[in-house]
Image (tube, rainbow, N blue to C red; front, side):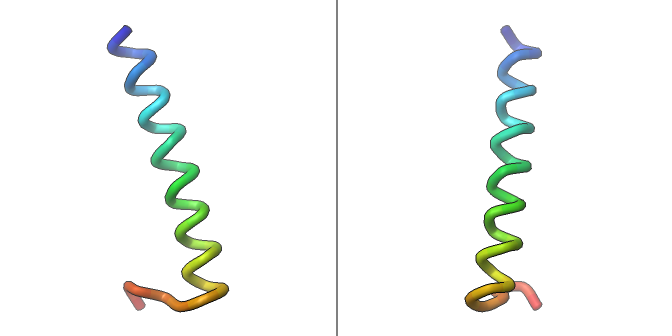
Length: 32
């Protein structure tokens, strides 16, 4: 169960990171 949760969390984080990167570049970049 722990391993599955970690995998899901990693996949979710990757998806969010990708979405944030794409949306941030398209609209505005909060970091840079």
